[in-house]
Length: 393
Image (cartoon, rainbow, N blue to C red):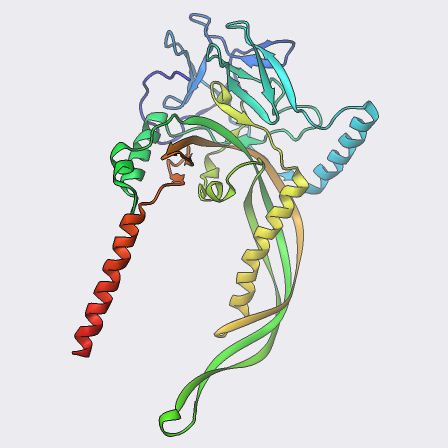
């Protein structure tokens, strides 16, 4: 994707206007299956410019500002009501003989005439022949699919991301010398990843045991020892806790450990979904269904509640015998969050880089120099041995 030079961007510049929402000029193509945003100056395809936070023509520099309705907000959705709706949609699909999977679809590129295949959950990409941005018109608003409630726009430019990557490489301990000097070679691709966020009021009942340590002296003479023992007493109780915006990735085949390290996200900067923000960027729709997403959220919530239970039991150590958790007032949102992705190779091995495109945080896999690690370990052992000999002397 070609982008004109633009200033670095720190805060969102979306400004609500009292005149109401103004739609950016869009053009449906291929019987409504794809969408492009033509430049009003030269007719080329507009792209979303991260630095300027508006649509920009990469050829003539024409800009189109995105205008927002002050009454347009991101609302929480009722989880139970949506489950009922999903059940209704499933019955309608079965009666109509429709497949639940939207596995592939061809989009015709008006710029060069090529037919581009969209596979799986991909909803926004660029034409491999002419680099024009292409989108599935109904990718995030398809019938019998949960629509996107909001999205966090790309806030960190490609140029800034590349600088952050250089700083990240320079900060790595035990990295090979040639890796640190040459850096990472590759191209960042901007991708919107789908997420569920869940809110829930929880009520927890628990039983367990509190352990308090105490010490006794046993034996006599050379066999005299001070031993630690634990006194156990029963504990039980109940409490409420509200969880807000528990994040669950709704895409499969992703490195979950890396993705989770991209948190926290500035979700307060999310805006209502706009198709225009996808122009020139990759995007995916959800693959993890809503019920499965909430099951994962429940496991995250439970692990946090276990820490609460241990804190309430108190003492030096704790045993949890039972913990019953009830969920109420469950709501959710379907969000798209921005990530810069880059796979790269070093000595024939493939590594993955991810950058939070809202905060600039770089997370990634990296190579290690075992020569440096071995030298550091031996040096540490020599220092410890020297200190030991010093005290012995």
